Image (cartoon, rainbow, N blue to C red; front, side, top):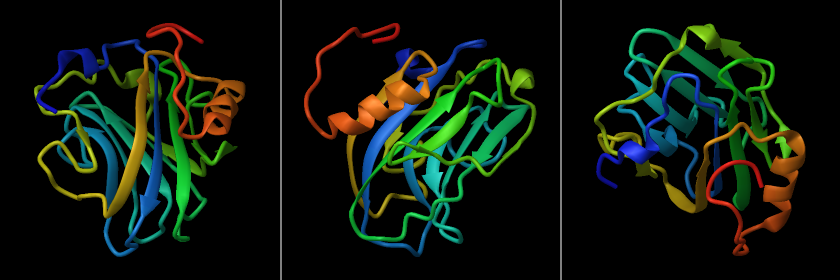
Length: 174
């Protein structure tokens, strides 16, 4: 998808990323969602599976300051898995990764309050970095980006919905 400014994350904006993933390979980093060219300090956000640990990772950066979260639940079995990342601009504690509705945050690095706007001029991509690097080997379904930090109850609701169609508000909290 070309550079969509509606998918940029402004300073002080909370957000939630959601996707169902089915990995066919476990030998490379698999990018799930990205509006960022790499996992370093470039501005933007990226959700990926690390090839060395097979766990979920997320990196957000304003181009200077970076905040990252690393999970512990290895996604090594063939099958569908539900992945959610909650980013609460005001709280590293409330920012977390969920795999199949279970909280999964082993560690963080950086200071969340130092990260400002994630706005950039690169493409939003599902299944690769914005520059097409680190492609996802498998299938991705039901990708969603919410403009709020979902809580654990909401994440459980997302998970229980599976891949069914749901109609609700396009902004705010459901």
